[in-house]
Image (tube, rainbow, N blue to C red; front, side):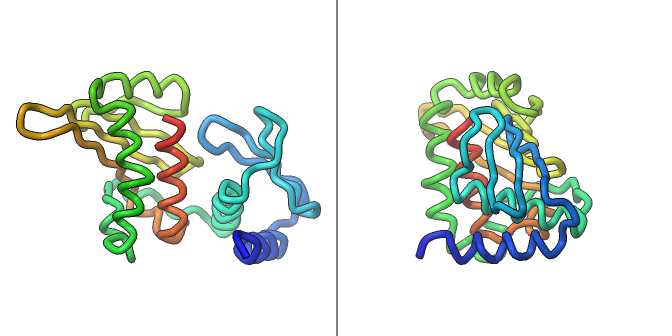
Length: 183
C-alpha cells in the first residue's frame, strides 16, 4: 500500500485548489518543480523525481499555502507538545534527535556550519543553535548542549506552534527526520 493513498488524496486536493498546472516551491536547500497534471515533482538541483515522503510534505505544504499559511506564533514548541506527540516521541527521538547528537554531540559548535548550507541563522539557544526555514514560513530550531562528566550531549528540535495548522503530527516526524539527515 505504501504512500499511494496519501499521494492520491494530496494530488486531488492540490488539483482542486490550484488554477496553475505548474508550481514551484523551495524546500530546505532545493527548489522543486511541481507538474499538477502529470502528478510529478522534480528536484531542480539534481533533476530527479522527489521521493514519495518528500512529495507528500511538498504537496501538503502547497495545499496549505493555497489555503493560506497561518501566521507564525513566535512560540517554540517541542514535538511532545503536539497532538499525539507523546506517543510518537520514541520514533521522533530515534529519527530526529539521536542522529543530530551522533553527528554534533562531541562538537556542538560544528552545527553552525549548516548555516551556510541552508536558509538558516545561528541563534543563542543551548551551547549551539540554528533556525532553518524548511519551507517559507516554516522555521525549525535545532539546539545542542555539550555533554559533561555527569551527562552526555543532548539535542532538541523545536517548531513554531503554527506548524500544527500546516502539517499533521506524522508529517512533522518526517520533516524533522529529513532536516536531521541533511544538517
